[in-house]
Image (cartoon, rainbow, N blue to C red; front, side):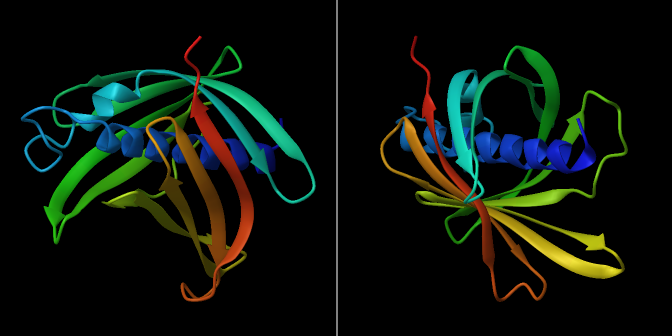
Length: 181
């Protein structure tokens, strides 16, 4: 599989992680909130998801299984795509301010490739935004993934790209749903 597709899969995995976190936030967890325990909602992320994504030309379908655990300060999720180990998603809580929960995020691939810089996740209500930046041919580019949730088991997402962090172009979009089989 070429690097372009590996990057797209990594982005899709990050979307799933953000989506799972949002699902957890939308489900009532008695006496434990993300402000009290930022890992509590992530524990519900375990399980199977059906994932559909389009880039405007092609539609991709994937089945994603998550195996998650708090390992001390970090929360990690091993992700299996279509029955093949693919990625380890790492979350590091950085605080809660103005009603927004913040995390640093990292994805590690099974091919042991060099990890990218840490990204960010900001969660506010039913809107969850992953953001990152990278260098591409000497130019800084920005990425963000926006998740909007409707109900506990349905998530719409958009993967967006910018060269100035102000004007955003949607590169991919899709929907996820929890697989309850």
